[in-house]
Each structure stands twice: as C-alpha cells, then as structure tokens.
Length: 473
Ligand SMILES: *[C@@H]1O[C@H](CO)[C@@H](O)[C@H](O)[C@H]1NC(C)=O
Ligand SMILES: *[C@@H]1O[C@H](CO)[C@@H](O)[C@H](O)[C@H]1NC(C)=O
Ligand SMILES: *[C@@H]1O[C@H](CO)[C@@H](O)[C@H](O)[C@H]1NC(C)=O
Ligand SMILES: *[C@@H]1O[C@H](CO)[C@@H](O)[C@H](O)[C@H]1NC(C)=O
Ligand SMILES: *[C@@H]1O[C@H](CO)[C@@H](O)[C@H](O)[C@H]1NC(C)=O
Image (cartoon, rainbow, N blue to C red; front, side, top):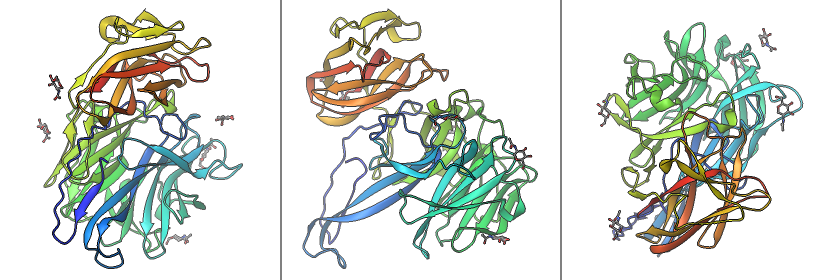
C-alpha cells in the first residue's frame, strides 16, 4: 500500500519499500468509486485519520506494543458538488488511503427546501477541523445568495468527519463581509478563520474555543487576496491565496511569517509568473509525510462539474515557497515525491488492437498520430481492445486514458483489464486541453500479455480514445 507507514517498535527493523506507481494526474477526470462519476469536491479541504494496527505484536496495543505496528492513514476529502451548476447541491465527502483512489462516502450537508441550504444558494469552500475539547468536527463555509450580496460564513458540526453535519447558521464574522474563506488550526489547538473581506482585505480571525464563532481579529492585509489557505512548517506560517479575478485564474500569491499576527512578508508568486499558478486557484495545502501538496481548482465556469483538481508538489524552504508542475507524479508518506514513471504510449488506432461492434478509427486533430478510435459503446456496444500491453512489474498502477469528449456531460465506459472491469468517467474535454486524461487505477501483470478493453456503459457512447499512457514499472 502506497501510503502505509510501517513503524518498528523495540528495535526490530523492517524496510519495505513501496514500488507502487499510483499517480496523481493533475487536471484529469478522476472517477470516484461509489458514484462512477468525476469527483465532486471542488474548493475542498482534506482531513486525515490514523489508526494503529499490530502486525506481529507480543503485547496488545493497550500500552506500548512490542513488535511491528502499522499506521493506516485514511484521507477524507470534503468539497462542493457542482454537478448542477453554481447553486448549492451538497457538500460531499470522499475517502482514500493513497490520495489517488477515491470512494464517495456521502453528503455531509444536503439540499434543503429553504434557508441557507435551500435552492439557488451559494455554499462554497467547506473546511473541517476537529475540536478536541468538544470531540466535534466543525465545518465552516461561505454562505451567500446567488448574486454574492450576503457575504457570510456558515458553521456546522458533526460527530464524525465524514458523517452528517448539523447546520448551525450563518453570520458576518465580527460584522465584516466574508466570501472565500479557509480555516487554520495551530499546534496549540487555537484555530482561525481566514476570510476575504471585500472592503478591507484579507483577515485572520481567531475562533472561539469551541470553533463555532470568531472572537477577535489577529491580522488584516489591506491587499485583496481570496481563496486563502495557511500551512505551517518548522515554525513558519505560509498564507497562500489568489488575486480577485472571478473564475479565471491568476498568479496566486503567498506571504510568510513566524507569528500569525505578523509581520508577514510581502506577497510573492509561488509558481512561475504568467502561468496563472499552472492555471489553478488555491484550495488547500496538505502535508503528506516529507511532502507538501498544493490542492488547487481549475474552474470551468461554463460547466462547473467538469472543473478539475490541480494537485502539485510544493517545496517550502525557510520562508520561501515554490510550486512544481508535473503531468503526473507519485506521492508517498515515507519518501520524497517522484515525477511520472517512464511510460509506454500505445495508440488506439494501432493495428495490433481489436476493434469490434462498430468502433472505428477517426481523424482527430489534437490526438497523437492525428487519429482516435470512436463509436465506443452505443446500442451495438462498440469496443476497443488494446492487446499486448507491457509492464515490467506485477503492480497496481495508474494508466492514463487519453480521450476526447465533445459533449457537455460526462461520458462513461466499462474498462476491463485482464478480465476485471470498472467504470470510468470522461468529463467534457473542453477546458482548453485536448486530449484529456481519465485515470485508470489497475493491477497490471509483468510481461507483454496485458489486455485492456474499453467498451460501453449502459448503452451510452463512450469517449473517443487517442491512446494510453502505461507506466513501465
Ligand atoms: C438544477 O438546478 C436548477 C436550478 O438551478 C433546478 O431547477 C433543477 O431542478 C436542478 N436539477 C437537479 C437535477 O437537481
Ligand atoms: C443578495 O443579498 C443582497 C444583500 O442582502 C441583496 O442586496 C441582493 O438583492 C440579494 N440578491 C438576490 C439575488 O437575492
Ligand atoms: C458570535 O460572536 C459575536 C461577537 O462576539 C456575538 O455577537 C454573537 O452572538 C456570537 N454568536 C453566537 C451564535 O454565539
Ligand atoms: C522553483 O524551482 C524551480 C525548479 O527547481 C527553479 O527553477 C525556480 O528558480 C524556483 N523558483 C523560485 C522562486 O525559487
Ligand atoms: C522495462 O523493460 C524493458 C525491457 O527489458 C527495458 O528496456 C526498460 O528499460 C524497462 N523500463 C524500466 C523503467 O525499467
């Protein structure tokens, strides 16, 4: 398992180096199991639970175990469901043990008939922190009407991170406007609301001990920055956020300080100037073992459900921050992240493939070799079978399916690898990048005999497939 941390107590040594090459593919279609749809957790945040398990313990886990323990980490990704436009539909929660394979767990807040969570309301950027004193998970979110004129924060509480939350209500924190917001919980248990106050600037406001209200202002920047997220490393606080350009991206900024009340360094870019933060907006910053991961959103304002997730490695050193762009990368809790493995790129139109039931080769100007295979699925269930896919290892890995989908809604396909099937989602490929990638997380066998078949799902049309990108290891 990629993110399993193995600890050895009482001097026993065990080095188990993971060769897994599950990859994060920024900007791809990420299919969630449980819904078979592209993950709907936009503007989100992340929480983690760890449980300790004895693998071969002499004593039980009551006090200090003697033996080998493993720490199982479960990540919970909480964000906005945008399946039906900008209005509130639900706050969703997904879980994963490796940050690549996500399972839909449930709606933490659901659409109600009226009120803040009713029709045509704005509920954005939900963030959750845990309050030890009350044993309660506390969610804060931006609450607004459809013209963004109310500018409030809402608060909800729950007894489990990924269970139902009880909505408490909304208000303007300390009487100031609040739109894009974030939360930060410090090492000493004090917690803070990060809030974009349009007339005055960006605020850090201290939360009450139970985290359900604000007590006082800690810092105010007069500069206008939204989508705020704080991360702390080695006693240095980093505040990240974007400039105010609506759904369009810009060069996001950061500022650093050794105290939340300042002085804070002047705002600077953390991605190369002019890349618009690799075309993304800050949502959250997550520590993963020795790594720090930037979680951004690439909004597609004309079709918000097809907005993608730009997760990239962030290097924090002293008081400086630097974001690296990767087509795909491997994250680990034990080791430094690595860039995309070497990949083979079998073409859909290759003569070694088998096309059946109406699937045909098409011309495709954006595709590799200027060709794709289309008419996959449909009533005759057209299918594209890649034969002889190679892998140097028997391993679970991430294959990218490069595709086009010119519709405004998701397409689906049944993808069968060596006899095992799963459903993949293919969001519209209309975000300025063609072809798109849909990620297929799958077991491959060592050798050249892997067979990957892409066929229809429930009679609908699948995507036009350009090629696969298959890790060699
Ligand atoms: C989508 O939202 C619109 C209003 O924004 C509403 O009329 C419609 O019923 C919603 N559709 C679904 C499937 O929720
Ligand atoms: C949103 O709220 C503001 C402030 O109350 C109000 O001026 C505006 O008319 C409201 N917009 C809509 C669409 O209700
Ligand atoms: C939150 O704090 C404000 C300012 O101290 C106070 O006026 C308000 O009543 C508090 N809200 C709740 C729900 O306690
Ligand atoms: C960020 O890292 C890249 C690659 O290592 C380097 O070229 C660039 O100069 C760094 N940028 C900053 C602002 O440190
Ligand atoms: C996979 O195996 C092939 C054939 O032995 C070799 O050429 C290639 O370098 C290997 N790839 C990796 C990443 O080790």
